[in-house]
Image (cartoon, rainbow, N blue to C red):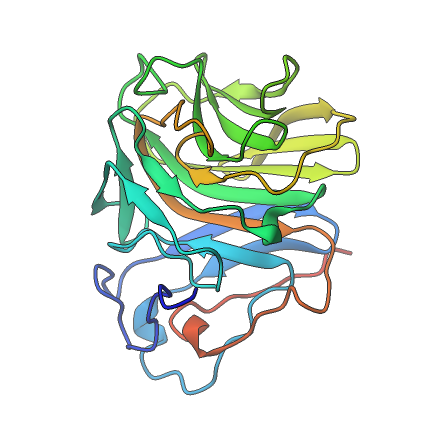
Length: 262
């Protein structure tokens, strides 16, 4: 990331103990269905680099830094602190405009994509610090996509600035950590909550490219700042390309397994 990449070459990154385990199981796209980060204590003596699963293009871990482990636009954090999360540390947002600005990363200029994250609401009353109707997890500018948590607790995907959206059938109303994912494939959207499919539907729209992007708020306006914690936010391309598999030694401390569905 142009000088802002996390250094994962040490046996045990800061904030993670040997018992830290992230198990993210999703059956969400034909080409791959699960990502697992195993105990770091088992990786301390690993000698070989681990190849990232094809399609993984960005992974913001929140380990005391807003950086991605891949080379994307240098992030600019505002109003963000760090606290124990689902795995190691997590981003903590709790004020108007809080979030991580990502610039306009071309790697997110896609129509088919997947976004994963661990989310934790700070309260059951509001999802956004500024009272907006959605607390955004990953969002772009007007015309681009926005993935977040609606005020009623449902997961939401929409073209920002447009009235229509797709919502999940299940809700998050407590203040526990939950794993969430959205998959856009063709004209179809599917949501996942803690590994279970929770609805979605047809969404025949075109997402705009090139707009400002942010974790935890809208990219260009800074509104809809998520009220709570975000951890291990990752972005994927659904369609595998030659440039989508980024295997290098920075993944040495995060063993990644890729499974082909039958």
